[in-house]
Length: 425
Image (spheres, rainbow, N blue to C red):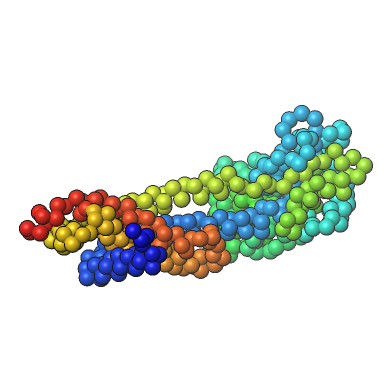
């Protein structure tokens, strides 16, 4: 007895595939509608994976361009948590020192020497730096003396910043972009809206804690410090003239760095500013928002993957239904095949090949559609498309598996039909 040659086995497989393709082509309309369910499911899945990967890469890019380039430096004291208010959020210090007061008994004002900005600017990777103060977390704002007497007062945070404040915080300002030397201020967009002030009215005089002040600009965007949209900013010189000793206020240095230099600058800044006592200061660079990003991506992925799973299930049921109908329509053909020597395995293999072909074709269509969606959405948002390796092959491979699984029961039914009973039909 001779063993079947490799060429014979290959011809058998090719014959099964040709018959499967012919059977699908003979029922082209029904096959197209059946493949649609698989195509929708796989297209949704491919688009979900592609968009999630692309969006995650975009989030990383935005983070590197903004938050990862901002370093905060503050004075430290014994006791309490190590935190620095960078204007955007409160972040943990690089060392274990405390930021509620000086470590050596000095005031916050003493912690920063007069040439602190110049010293920091000499560190490689520093773009610009600024010193700012929270003068009053609940200053009163009114548009006129009459409004103040009527009790129409709006409480908001009052901040003092130097000439580099707007550049370091990357503020977008409608109106004058410098505060000058007079009693002038910028209002955050939220505060300005609450007071009924628009950019067209600038400059306009208001009262800040009873002091006449000219509003010369409105902060329309503060990407790294959104709290400034509900605050007011005056110059350091004006703050010193009005409030005197700023050492009693909340002093922080903000340093804008080049991408990738934030953590190095955070470690070097205290030594550069206070070489005599670097432990009097602590610096922080905002950590990467990994948890938030992962939480957003996970929620979005779960929703879209759920929709993809439902669509795939519908597609699989469609393939199973079409294959089962095909079995019932071809009972006589099945009986004839069995009568001329076809085994149950051969009959089952034929129908599994047909259902697998449907799934494979649906996977190709769905995979291509999903990739087109990823490219289109990315282009609309000016994103760079980022795809996992092997994603283009996911559609056809998954479609083939779904088709084979869906054809399992109809193939089993076909293989169990008795030849004699089939030929009598």
